[in-house]
Structures are given as C-alpha cells and as structure tokens.
Length: 112
Image (cartoon, rainbow, N blue to C red; front, top):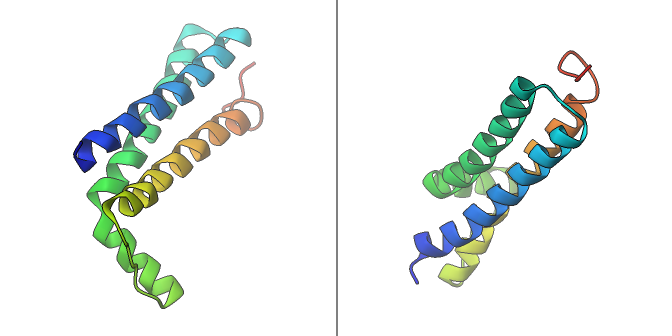
C-alpha cells in the first residue's frame, strides 16, 4: 500500500466516527434539523480538513516543529511519517468534537 492509501484508511474511519458521534448526540438532544446538519457538517469538514492540511503542508509542519523545538524532524521510516501526520489529523478531529461539545452547550451557539 502507498502512503496516500494508508492515509485514507486512517482518515475515513476517524472522520466517520467523529461525524457519527456528533450526529448521534445532536439527534439524542433533539436539535432542530438545521442545527443538526450544521454541527455535523462542521465537524466533518474540520476533520477531513485537518487530515488534508497535515498531508498537504507536511513540510511547513516540519519547519514549525524545527522553529519551536530547535531540532530538525528526523523520520526513520515512511510509517513514522504517516503516524506523525495522522496524529495531527486525529488531534484536529478531537478538537472539532470538543468544540462541538462546548459550543453546543455554552455561549451563543448553544442549542435551546
């Protein structure tokens, strides 16, 4: 398998699980259909966008890592690179679900 194929094998299940969790929660909490679609779509977009950005801007991420830590990124295998980039996407997905959890309960976006 190539690196992009493995990346999509990680991306699609993670994005689907996050989107499914948000949809199930909005349904359980009886959100209006518009709000349900908006929250679910936003989490799906951020999740897929996080993976896409990580794999598209991998050299910029390496430069940022070097800038903040003072050490260059040393990757010993393609699998290590894939793991690092997938981790960025998974963290972005987790942040999107957390933002939904907080945003849908508190503040101006809270569901009635």
